[in-house]
Length: 353
Image (cartoon, rainbow, N blue to C red):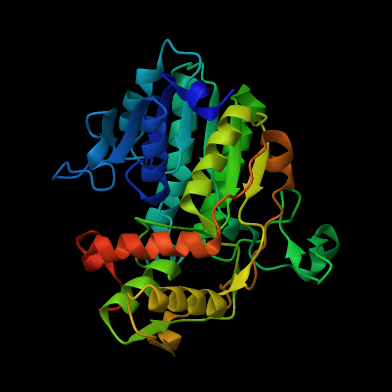
C-alpha cells in the first residue's frame, strides 16, 4: 500500500511543525490527506511562517515543549484514537547556538521530550507510533578506545549505523542523545510504540540561513565573497524531501523500540560542498564565482567539531524500502532557487551582516 493511502484521514501530531523539516513534513501530510495537528511555540503575534499556506488544512495547537500543561492539553486531542502518529521534530537544533543558549537547548530538547512522553502515559493514549528525530551529531568523532566497534568502508572511512558507538561533542548533540534514550526508556517501561530516527545532515528550501548550505547561498546572492569556518569536516548531506520520506517510512513500517539512521550514503568535505554550490549557482546565473574566505571566529569552540559523518542506511532500506532519490546537484539547485525567490523569508536571520 502506498504511503499516501496509509496516511489519508489518519490523525497525525507534529511538534516543530513550523520549522524547516517540520514544515516539509506538514506539506506532505496535507497532500496525503492526513488529519494534521501541529504543535508550535506560542508567540505574541500568533503568526505561522513556513506553514501559513496550510492554515486551512491543519489544526494548530500553541504552547511550549518546556511547559507540561500546554503539551498535555495539545496531546489530549488524540484521545479516542488508536492509529495516531506523533512526529517529534521540535528542538533547538543549531549546534553553534547550543553553546550560546545551553539551558534553553537542554530544556527544550530533553525536558520537552520528557513532557511529551509522560503526557502520553498520563493521558493513557493509544497511539500507533511516536518518532523522535535525533541527529547524526550524536555520533561525534570516533573514540579510539571504541574503534573496534565501528564498521568501515574499504577506503577506511567509518560507516555510522544503528550499531555505532555514540560520542556527542556539543550541547546540542548531548541533548538529542538524551531525548533518544528517553524515547527508548518509555518503550521499555510502558511499551509505548516509539522509534528514534537519525537523519544525517539535512538541507533544502526554508532551512535557517545560519546552517552551512544556507549561509553559503545567502552570502553568494548578496556579496562577492563568502565567509565560512572550518571547511575540512565531511558531512553526509540529505535533501529535505528524502528526509521526510524517511520519517514517514519509519513511522509506518518501523519496529517499535528500534532506531533507524539514514542519509545520502556518501559524504563530502565542506570545501567540496561549498565549491559545488558556488559552481552550480554560477552556471545558473545567480552569481559570478564568489571568493571563499575562512574566518576563525566561525569555527566551533575547542575540539567540538565533528570531523567526518557517513551513514550506512541498510537497515531502513531493508525494512521499509526507503532510499534517497534526490541527487546533490538537483537538491542544491532547488535550494538556491528557493533562497533566490524568498529573500524576505531569510534576510533578517543571516549571521553574516
